[in-house]
Image (cartoon, rainbow, N blue to C red; front, side, top):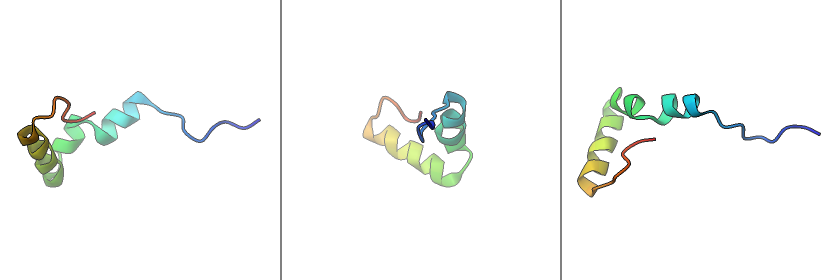
Length: 45
């Protein structure tokens, strides 16, 4: 029996979608800014 497709890793998720990853690009910074103005409690993963 083969493994399932999704094998989640916390570190990989954080590196790709985390706060620092978002802040490293201009588009990501705009995303964080939009989420702050909307009032999100969680800005990034």
